[in-house]
Image 1 (cartoon, rainbow, N blue to C red):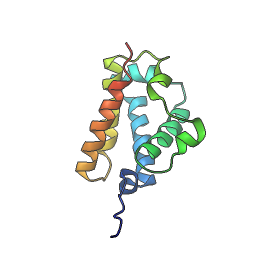
Image 2: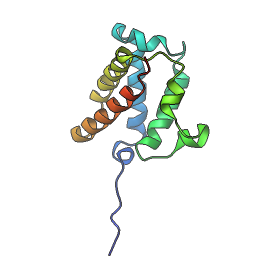
Image 3: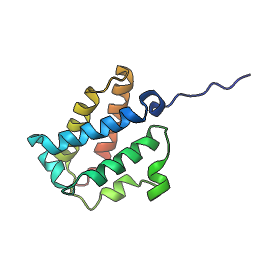
Image 4: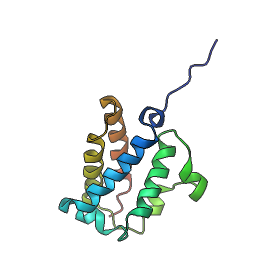
Length: 128
């Protein structure tokens, strides 16, 4: 009996596509007036946030655990507690992610599944 290897979302997307997703996500956060609320809780420079999101998503999608190697367990909700995140910020975060994801040349079923999971994650960050 042979083992069937599972192909991860990271493998389906690839590193370059993931980098593009993160870049486009923060482009929208930085430029869309309707994302102003979520943008305001970030530092003036988004470079650190970009790097951390890429590293987190890499491991979360089944690729290299870059975030855990550098920062330990993500503990996302705990790490986000210092920031006031209401439904509006969660919605703005997802708006930016939806726009960024729409630009990717990735299987539609994969996009849909990822967006559903990311929406649950974004709603889990709500602390207001």
